[in-house]
Length: 332
Image (cartoon, rainbow, N blue to C red; front, side, top):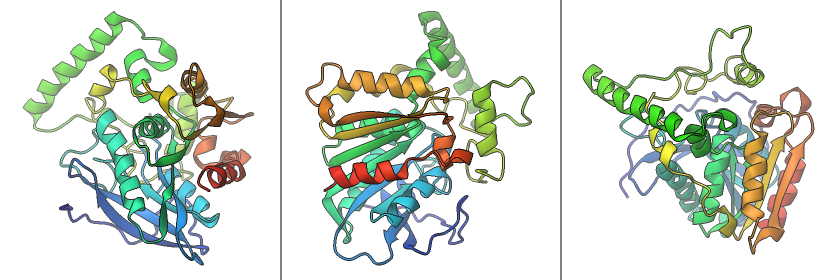
């Protein structure tokens, strides 16, 4: 497979400190659409033989130098080979256009990460799991429904990006009329972009923060726009996705076959998160009428907001001990 030569920084430019317990390197791999993806590979420093492995991505609009890298490095400290990658069209990854998203291509990104890990000399290809954060939690579930090589999946503080695009936050725009208006606006923007010769950005997290901003917007601001989580390559920290970047999500529900997932799934959400309904509903839809409900779990973290499960927040809310035990059990 032909890979694009990407320009990868060799500096440690993460939002979290580097661990001396793991070996870190930059790697690239290609998905089946020919897009070259950039990733950080973390391997336990004293690793011997073939180990279980985990691919990590998210949040939606973030980069591997933020939350996914933190998760990957921490799980590597606990004995797993881990891979945190930038999705197509974002971060250091390839793609001729920038800041576009696709339910299909982004699911393929996860599957391409599984390809890479399956062929790595220090990975046991029969023991591979995935972690998706925020919008990539939904992508992880979609991947688990499609990729039979995935033995265990953790969806952290998840969004269903197709649902929120089609129905709005809290399903407040769930009508044919509202969806038609969105489609019409997108179609009009396509022509404006072509006339301008470039794609208009939709804007990242609002800055400055309005005094009357909803709680969840303040939650996002506190992570993406402050030294806690800001990164210069992060869409959410800067100009955001293209206005038409998520157009196809309106018509393409990604969790249609989640009840057919045979492998283990752990959905983790904070009960103070505005997005908690995504996790609760995804879990219910996954287990209702399913023959494979016994290895599915919903874990609610008391008092945790949406971004507390990005980096732990002040509460150190990420249940890494539980994640370790989950993956050790199901990647045994």
